[in-house]
Image (cartoon, rainbow, N blue to C red; front, side, top):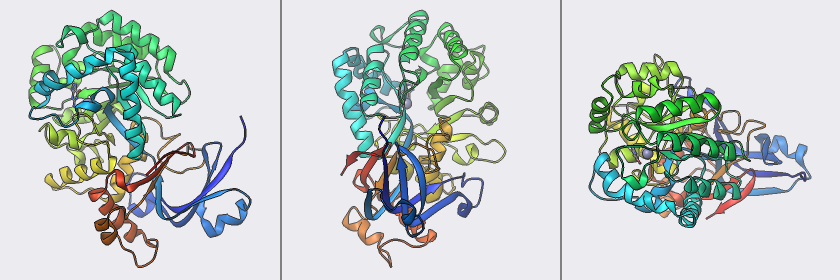
Length: 442
Ligand code: GUN
Ligand code: ZN
């Protein structure tokens, strides 16, 4: 491999600790006029331009004047086969699945169709500044292959897996306890740790798996201890009632997964809107993560996630943001964070701009056990980052005007970042870089 070193001059903002648990000033780094040095795709240095410039006098510098660079956004729960059915009218979870989701996911038996949509999906993530995601594919292994192939072509750090479901779904979408075990094993051997790709064992949710399938999934996690477990949990009231009815021996929804050995440090559960206090405690103990998917929870009428409970000191749980497209209504992590703020408001809680940035970056990295590689600009981490334009529309230019060209204080950048989260969308993403290489430009 040839050697590459380059610099970026802009404002830089990142989170280095969790602002839910420590004073914000201790959690945030802000360089109004900063210099980021990227060597072979990884962060080599970050600091004030004036201080660092002399040390790197001879390397090529890309200048982003009046732009704010943050770490790439991390989407901890999304479905690539649901791209085309985003914003489907009128139903809550269980009816929404049978009316819209299952017929759409059937199309992903066709490998070429899956490749086509995977390409659109990944381009859409990059347009929105999302550089890493934890992704449901469809039940068909060829849909998982298609996704990983397109992600590999773009050199992305992506985690995905084949959906496993052997009951309560149409025949054309069902696997079996044995076939899902064998196919998943093959996919893990093919894709896990291949370039930047990682595998998540992906039962759809408790209702679509037999106990036999869940037991096999537990076996897979034993055989491959560094793959992820990714599923849905306690999203909708009727869903929880159905799970309790289907698994009478279990002590609630989470316990169905727990009995099969699926509640681990590398487990990511989407939603958790209906969790009981006991389940919060168990997730905290097990160091599992929750993907908070506010646009989806509002769109499907599922409810208001208890972010304050999940981030409490008594039962701290790793939390990331998830768009959950196609039940989520946007690919944008900015819009997802805006919805998270509004869900918090409805629970009389606050979500500050820096807390939201944490959830979108370092918090997501922690939820995905990737803190050593992603989430901020610490030296040695992978240089996936987003160039934000805080003045991308006339109204945002009015809202985010500064006394100087660049907001000089932490208070001012917090205020402008907040407005960008609340009003922003893909237009605020000026560029997206993957391992220091330009991957999208507005
Ligand atoms: N629960 C089971 N499957 C799904 C899905 O595809 N989307 C959401 N939001 N919840 C689910
Ligand atoms: Zn989902």
